[in-house]
Image (cartoon, rainbow, N blue to C red; front, top):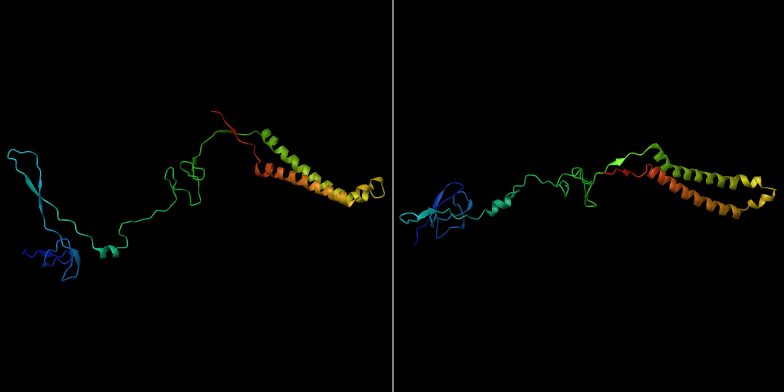
Length: 214
């Protein structure tokens, strides 16, 4: 029967004899109640050394086998993986730089657009002259004046004209059906002119950009 090994508690350094083969098993210290793994005895293994004249083989001690970690300590550790800071800020998928904010979709560093999945390109443009701007805005101004003119005409036809043609040969113009159809057509023209004028004067008041040739 093998001699009982001397076991040393890693917490309180208490030495005591174990019963049976306890190598690699968890035991509890009888003094401090610390649970630990009994390390194995040091062994030696043959290590081949470079050829020598006498052909001797050196013996080197091996490290004791690693024990299992204490499960209780792992459960009580609030941060077992050592994570000190969790960075969840949005980053550019192209250059990994920080985005301006959570709603930004264009990287300020490389110009990558996360919606189109393309990198922005830089183009040289030529400034517009005053004449080019006027030519671009003139159709919008003309449509706005046309719509305003139809508003005045519809008002005159519905309010003033009945008194003017009363008792004359033009009295046929003073009829409800005629006024209704004229009003419907005038409103259609006013709507079209107003829509065009809004797009040209408000939405796109500047001419399209002229790209400079390289």
